Length: 439
Image (cartoon, rainbow, N blue to C red; front, side):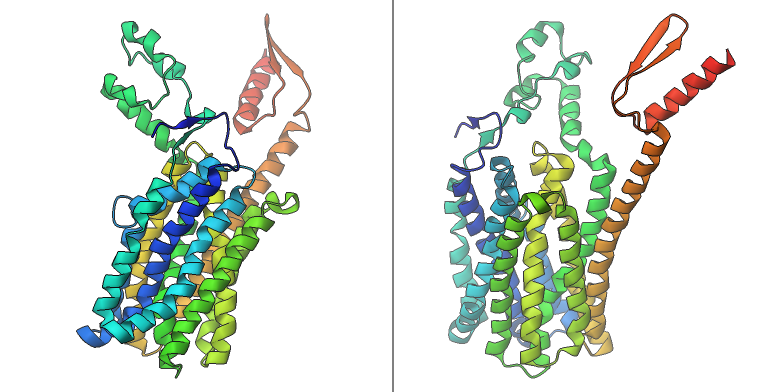
C-alpha cells in the first residue's frame, strides 16, 4: 500500500483505526503474556521444577514479545510506533486508548484462561490462546503507512560528502534520505543513512531514559509472574487469585485512558515527565508494601493501585520517547526502548524465583522490585535536576543577554550574536574576548 503524504500528523481520521488496531495488538500480545502467570502453578506441578526454573518459561515469552524480530515484537513495536506517526496534539490520549488493550485483555482473559485450564488442561488452553492470537493478521491489515513532511528530508548535506557520483547527484537531490532507491547508492551511503537513523543513541537525555527503563522493567516484570502464586501461598483460592489479575487489568485501563487524557491537557502537558516519575515511583511503593498484604481483602486494594499506575506510566513511555527523539525517529527509538525492556524481562523472574527458593518467602523478591522501580524514578528526577542547575548556571554566565544583539570586533571583522548562547558559545566568546584584551 502506498503511503499517504501529509505535512504533519492528522490527529484523527484513519489514525483512530490505527489506534483500534494497536488496541487489538496489545490484547493479543501483552494481555496474553500476562496471563502466562496463571499457568505458572500448572507448569510447576507438571514439570516438578522450582520457582527459578519455572519462571524461565514466562521470561522467554515476555522477552520474545519485546525483542525486535522475534515473536510478538513484529506486531507490537510497529503498532506502537504507528500511533505516534498519526497523532501529535492528542498523542497521549491516543496511546492511552491503544495501550488499554493490555488491561482489558487481562481483565477478560484471566478468568477465561482459568476456566480453560480446568476444562481442557493447560495444553488445550494454550492451543486455544494460540488460535486467538491469529487475529493479529487482521490488525496488520489496518496499519496504513503514512509519510510525514519530516520523513521526506532531502540530502544536501549527504551529497556534499562526495559519496555520490556527480552524474547521479541531480537525480538524487529530491529523494528522501532513506528512499527505497537507496540501493543505487554506494556502501558509504548505506552507512550514513543507518547512522542518521540511530544517532539518537548518543543523546544524553536518551541515555538516561534508557538506563531508567532497564531498572523500571526489572521491577515490574516479576509482579505479573508471582502475583497469582503469592496469593495462593497466603490462602487465596484459585478463582480469587485469577480475579486479582482481572482487577489489575481493568484498573490498568483506567490508568491508560485517564493519564493519557490528563497529560494532554494544557495544564499538565508540560509536566508529562514528572507524571511519569510519579507513576513509576508509586508502583515501586506498592511492591514494597506487598509482602505485608496476606489476605484477599488486602490484595484487592493493591491490585487497584498497582494496576492504575502501571497503566499510567506505560501510556507515557512512547510519549516521552517521542519528546526526546522526535516523531521521525520514533519507530527506531521505540525498537531500542522495547529491546531494553526485554533484557530485564528475561532475567528478573528467574532471579526473583531464585530468591523465593533461597529465602522461602516472596519478601526479598518484592522488595528488590520495589527499590528497582523507585531508583528508576529517582534517576530521571536527578537527571532533570542536574539539567535545570546547568541551565541556571548558563543563564547566569550569559547575563540575560539571550535576546540582545552584541557586536564583537576583532580587527576589521565583526561578529553578530543574536541567538541564545549555549555552553560552547560561552567558551568561544571567552577565548575571543581574552585574546582581544591582550592585544
